[in-house]
Length: 150
Image 1 (tube, helix red, strand yellow):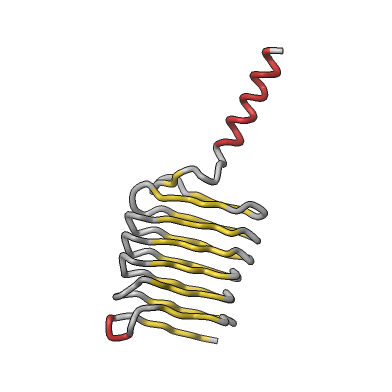
Image 2 (cartoon, one colour):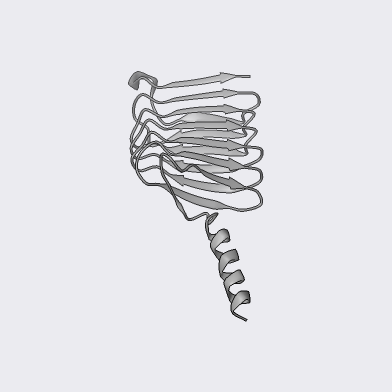
């Protein structure tokens, strides 16, 4: 009986290491694969987040400098209070970044919706392929750029 309990405890411990609520660090990237939906938060700056397949991912980067990867029908929603974050989306449904820290870049290829909000300076959004929505809330007079290359 003890060996069964030990085995179950070991299996549970292994499953917990992939818990989508785990915090990410600069040295510990976080990845979400379909069919799961995930929420990740960065402890410190410069985390790397990935969302693959038909998943919905929420990323939080309070210290800034994070990179968000969103691809293959994924829906990504990221916040970057510390600024200087990068969203890279390829074939995603949506790639949304709230960049209150400013200085964010979004590069979206074949992504239905590529959008930045809360940015007031030094932000850019570049869309290639067949984006339906490609926009930033930042004004061009504040060193912001929106580029659509179909």
